[in-house]
Image (cartoon, rainbow, N blue to C red; front, top):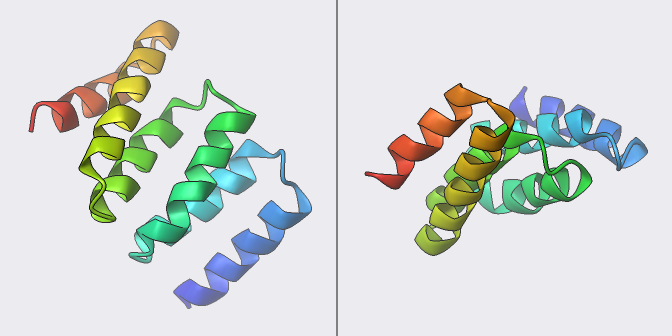
Length: 102
């Protein structure tokens, strides 16, 4: 079932490469399926398409941490913290801060 959902999101993302929401949905589905290595480039693409999509920084950090790239995760959370503070998305800023102080 998870694989079917991932494939549906993959098709949507492929058809709409500049649609940050479609890309994000794919990244989140991959992360939820414990496929962080596949999720990382998807979240990076979301951030390239829309640097204001602060939730993508947070999930990129989680994907990198699960893929054992602690330095990359810290960098993603730092960027996410600053982007979230700048935009006023305080829940994302707080989640990034919590991850950084672990």
